[in-house]
Image (tube, rainbow, N blue to C red):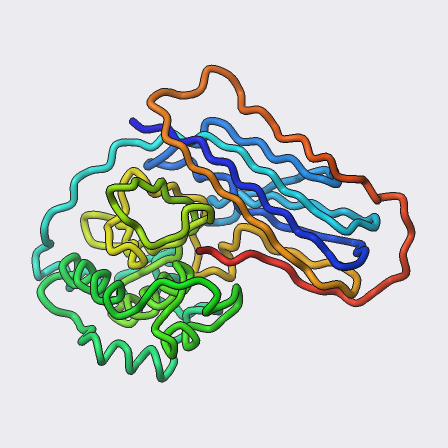
Length: 320
């Protein structure tokens, strides 16, 4: 059973002082039948009290606020995850499996994942792309999704800076390029169009040199999971043309990026925001002997400075 040690450092720098910063953080790896988060630490600068809760999909959301004036914010998260053995998938499912994929057969939770989301609403371009790829129910559900995963990989190139954190899927489709967030959104739309429940997954990927993955080494990752009869949720990574395995570390699941972003927040003030993100994923053969060290940030604390009220601005980070 592999263990992974993950370090996710996020730094926001503002061109002027801001106040009343409120932030949600979705970075704690899930604990479920596929993996166990054995250690998790979060540290902030400026310091703040961090609270947390679980949503109805068992995602853990941490949140905090910094009322005082500051012009930098650092969020450092360290975690260790134990990945459980993954069962081998069959080459295909019976053709009769399509019969179990009728919307009226789904329970409430599955029904949610055939509905459009904020970033996963079909458009004219997604419908044209589906026609181009010949997306339709054929053979069996598993074979159809394997082929769709490969088709998206071949049709779209991987390139950063073509899209932004809130770009609609049409931007990636028009340019035929994007990052993992775009690939996952596009595949989600096409899979739901087949009336197969599909959910967006944010997390991390452990890269091996021998695999030549296209996704970025120093960023969080995103892929999709489709619900299939007798198999449950099966992961597909269209950015890298692989089925998800024990190198994919799951953090958050949702309809799309809108409810799975690693960080999302607002602040009061008028300032340009620059963002630096650094992610490191290391594979361990055994769990670490002691708890993870916390990074110490040598950043000033501006909590006591008084500033005039300013308009609110949003901030979040894209998944690469």
